[in-house]
Structure formats: structure tokens, C-alpha cells
Image 1: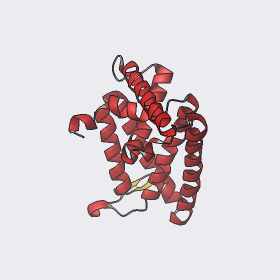
Image 2 (image 1 turned 90 degrees about the horizontal axis):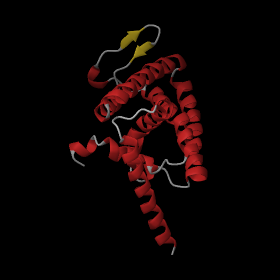
Image 3 (image 1 turned 30 degrees about the horizontal axis):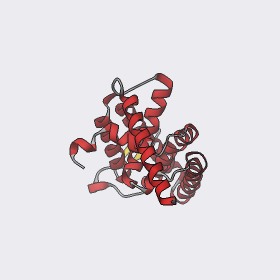
Image 4 (image 1 turned 180 degrees about the horizontal axis):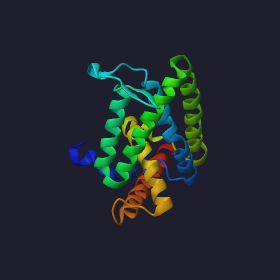
Length: 199
């Protein structure tokens, strides 16, 4: 994939949208995707600092550690901004809020309790999402076909869906119509392959 393909929002959205076309499944993902990211950042709070960077004391949030969790937050944020400046900036802000909130919660809980809370939350959220796919979407999750793309796009996908539903937001005029056509074509292609296999 070239650099232009890496930041092709239509292509990313169409890929993810083809696995999330059922309204109930989309709603389930809206509920659970960001908590998955948040609780993962809680766990990453306990990783060591990168390149011996200093710890940052931010009252009342406690200690912010410039570690893998911070690096992941920066990567996600920059990627979303490159995909779409307006909604990407909002997504980046949410990512940093998650990182700060997760760091604060992790500091208050301590590792021995934090990993148990994270495990319970992750199991609950992932179960909900697999139910969404198995019962409502009737298609395996995107992560089984493209793990990296699914994990990176999921938070941005549900945010864009919410912005479109609530405010009619589009990154540019005609975006949703173009993407929907690509999603429909991808689903039709998948159904044809599925039918061919069953013969």
C-alpha cells in the first residue's frame, strides 16, 4: 500500500463498513470500541518510558508516562488527522483524553487491580462485539481479515458514524454516498463468494 492508499479515507471506511452494515451491530460498536481502546491504554500505562523520557506530574490526573501508550495515542491521533482534518482532530482529542483518563485511572488503581478491571472490561466489550457480528451482522469481524486496519480504523469509524447520524457530517460532499456504493459492492462480492463456497 502506497502513501496515498494509506490515507485513503474512502477505502478504509468502505473496508470497515462492509463488515459493519447492520444498524444494531454499528450501535454495539459505538458502545464498546472506545472503552476497548481506553482500557487497553490503562494497561499500557504500566509499560516503561520510551528513551528514558521524564514522567509528567499533572494534578489532578497523577503521573503521565511517555511510554508505549503515549506513542500509540500519538500514532492514532496523527493518522486520524491525516485522514480528515475536522473529524480527525476531534478523534485525536478523544484519543488524548482517553490516554490522560486511562493514566489517571491506572495510577489510582495500581497494577494488581488495574489488570483485573481491564480484563473484565475487555471480555465484556469483546463479547458484545462478537454477538453483534454473529447475531446481527452474520459476518466475521474485520480483524480476522486485516487485524491492523480493523484495530486502527475502529475508533474513527464509529466516531464518523456518530457524527453522520447526529449531525449529517461528511468529510466532503458525497463521501457517504460514494462509500455506501463501495460497501454495497463489497458485501455483494462477499455474498457471491460465500454462495459459491456452499455449492
